[in-house]
Length: 91
Image (cartoon, rainbow, N blue to C red):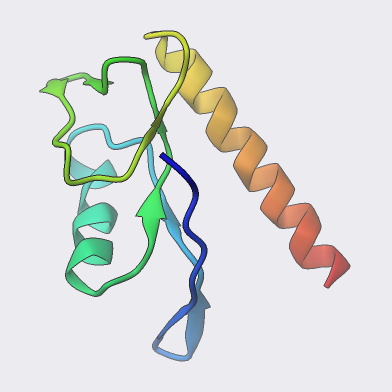
């Protein structure tokens, strides 16, 4: 799986991509919104597309971590956020 970068405007806010860990409930709602509105989405999930309620549905565009440990997924999302934050400050 690769990373898709695009740009969609919602309520005058440019949304390049919705990133989530895909856990049940509130983590999947933004992904469902992204799919319904053609917004690029994704993020990291544990190896085996593991989630607290079973296996994450294949319609979501995730990259899997090498480990099935949830902490590794969280670390990847922190790294993405840090990179995007630094990038936005340099623009």
